[in-house]
Length: 104
Image (cartoon, rainbow, N blue to C red; front, side, top):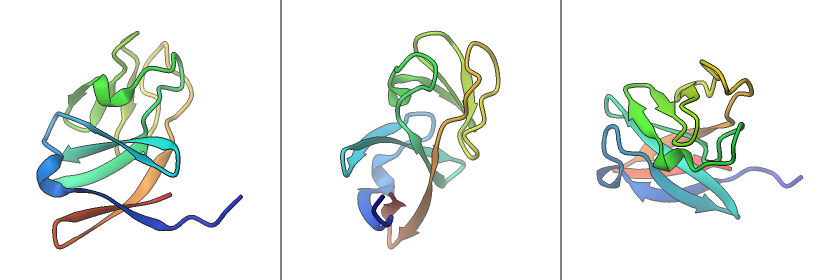
């Protein structure tokens, strides 16, 4: 497995509250979220049904899968309710001068 590095993926102005943004880093789909002005990143594919989390419904710090209404905690990736039981992978994020970087 290769060492993870920082990748510039977006500008903070592109990530609106309650409207996730999908990006691709080294072939991996990642969903970016704006929660109260802080940016978070998770794997974009639901662990239950392979749906795009960026197409899901974000409310505060929770993201709901668009297929079966399973919810995850955006900050931790924790699966919160059935039918999801496996947590989402999260990614380290940093913001510099409005540029968003993800470690992947």
